[in-house]
Each structure stands twice: as structure tokens, then as C-alpha cells.
Image (tube, rainbow over all chains, first blue to last red):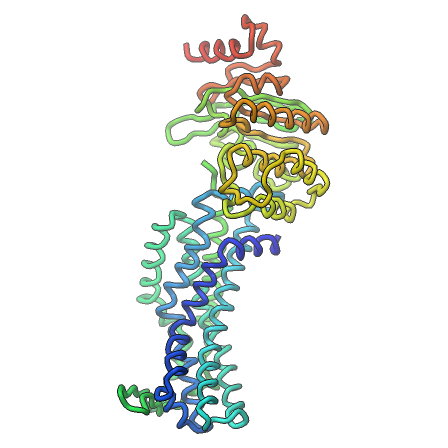
Length: 277
Length: 236
């Protein structure tokens, strides 16, 4: 069942998943390409030493984490609506209910597939950001592979933890938007519902589930400077405390897992009880 | 054991009663026709039987199991009137996908049906004509050697040649395996050709029920006359 359902999901929605992957990586890819093709723009990275590389790599990773749980929440919500809405609108979900398989299994597989897609897209995007920055630094010449490898490992490990934290928040959004779409399968109602839900989430409970910001609370003074027109257009004096990133807390983590399970379960229940009128 | 049974099966859509206390029994191996005009409640009754709709009250069972039990699909095939197979799939993908969900799938039988029904395997379902679409549905419904098959207006929208050909294939298939059939149609000729027992529905109710010969002897010389008389009596 899982294999068949995963095949159907991927085959039916692969372009949407591809678009989601691209959306998550575009903010990194576009600046990276601009920097890569312009020698002058590479100046801040060329002047880096192994000792200061950590600040830049950490910034790329942290920035991508924040992008995922802020502006890309809408993309995650739209992905849920775009993958849950069509087969309820065109009623093709009933083909699945005409098989000798419990009705709840297919929506459950669909939710699992969606959450895995969101998770892998986030892990890739979060790790891709420092990886690209690192490649640019290596291309600059002052940062060496041997001298920066340990730093890179620290950043990548922190990135993995950060991506997991981002996935928890994004999974709440995905499951909630899947539920909205299960209640109102019409795509345009689902889209409006997604936007409203994401805004409500931001305003009300985002700070509760935010595991990223608390890790920077005792960071001390520092700055991220953007100097337009100057060769040294990017200056970072922060030293990101990546060993404690993100700041895991039991209550928000448990609440996030419970929210994902409840929202996903209710969505599943609604879909499996749907009638073909 | 009866293949399909209903007791006082009733369903409303808003204030309208679409299926009204329908009681019927279809024994294993019987070919049962459900005849009624458009809007008589035939499709709704079939959806209640296979669990796509829930009854307001009354009950139904398929091989002794409730309609929402997934186990009924181990022994049941269904051809829907509505077009809701995934439109983006090719016919071949749809067959493979269904095979992966049905342990009872008979690969040899499926190949034979595909050859016999002769529909384009590599065409997207959205591009299939009504005739080819129904043929694909029949292949999907019969490839696991079901003990009962429910057909909802399979010949509706087909030209006379296509209808004749499709019914011939269906008759061959069901008579060869002796499976129970519930055929819903508003085309009297199709029901008469295939069924040995007929229920006539009008406005959600079964207004006449019996063998084709018995219905004909009730003052009508043909099944069409019996159908019109039963509907007329119900309306008066």
C-alpha cells in the first residue's frame, strides 16, 4: 500500500514538489549565482580567513532556517492545498476507496509522503545554503579545505538540527493546511484558508514553537552589515553560537508533535468519511 | 448466501428522499437488473451498496459484510457511471496501480480482458472516449475474478454498436465465471438482454420486482411496457 500510494503521490504531484524545492532554494541560488559570476562580489569571501569563515557559513544556514519558518510557511501551506485538493475535487480519491484497503490508510500515506517531502526539501535547503557559501569561500582562495572542514562540520550538524526544528514548525503548517483542504476541497477556498491560517499561526503561536531564536538570546553584541558599493559589502561581527542551535525545549517540541498527529489524524478522518454525492 | 442484500435502505439529499426503504436480495450467481428513469435513485442505491454513501437508515450488506468494509472489494467489482479514475494516469498505469492494491489480481485474466476489450493502454485516461473509458473500468472491475460485479449504467452514452459489443463481452465474462451481477440502466433493452431478475425503480422506490417473464405477464407484452406501467402506477 505504502509503495503504491507513494508512487501515485510522486507521479501526480512531482511538479508541485519540484516547485517547492526550487522555491526553498531560490533565495540562496540567486544571490549565489550573482556572487559566483561577479569577481567583485566575491571580495568579502576572498578576504575571509579560516577563523572567520564560521560567521559567514553560520549566517547562511541560520538565514535559510528563518526563511523556511517565515516566508516559506506560505509555500508549505500552498503545497498541502495543492496536493490534497485535486483528488478530492475530481473525486479520484474514491478509486482508492474501491480497493481492499482500509479507507484511512491512503490519506495517512499521503500525509506521510507530504511530510517526508517537506522534510527532505527543508534539510536540503538549509544545508545547501552553507554548502554554497563554503564553495564560494574555497573559490576565493583564502579559506582552505583543511582549515575550514571542522567549521563546516559544526555548521552542517547545526544545520541538520535547525532543519529538524524548521520541519516541526512546517509540518504543523502542512498538516493544518491539509486539514483545511479536507474540510473545503475547493482549491481557491483552500488557498484563502491557508493564507488566513499562516497569518493566524504567525500572530498567535509562532513564538511558542520557535526553537531558533532562543539560541541567540545570550549572543552578545554584534552586527551583520551590508555596505552597498563597497568591495567589503558584507561584514559580520557576530559569532553564532552554533553548538547550541537550535535551543531544544521539551514543551514546544512535544506540542508540535502532538499538533501534527492531531491535525493529520482529523484530516485523515474527514477524507476517509467523505461521501461520493 | 446472498451476494447483496438491502433492508429498508433509505437516503435523503436535503429534504428529498432519493432512496426510499429499498429491500432486495441478490443471490450469488444471479444477474439482477435495476431499471429506472434518469433520477430514479439507481446510482444512489448502488453508491449506498458499495459504501460511497451512508444510509439515513436501513442496512445493506455485500457477502454478509457492511458496505464500508474494505474486505468487500476482495470479491466485488464496480463500474461507476461517473468519471473519476485519475485523469492523469495512462490506462496501463491505472491497471498496474490497481494490481498493486489488490492481492487477488489475476495477471492472466487482466491480460485477456485487455486484449478482448481493446482499449488504448498508453493513452491518458482524460483522453479516452466514453466507450474506451468504460472498457478500462470493466477490465479493472473483473481482473481480480470477483464473485459479484455492480455495473452503473455501463452502456449509457454509447452508440448502439458499442453498446451491443460491450454487453456481449459482459455477458460472456459473467456467464463464464457465474458471478452475481447488479446492472443498473435506464435502457430497457440492455437490462432485458442481460438480467433474469429485474427491479423497477421510480422516485427512490422499488415499484416492481420479479423475473423478466413474471413482469411481462403482469398485463404487459414487453419489459418496456411493464416498466412504463409500473412507473405509471407509481405516479398515479
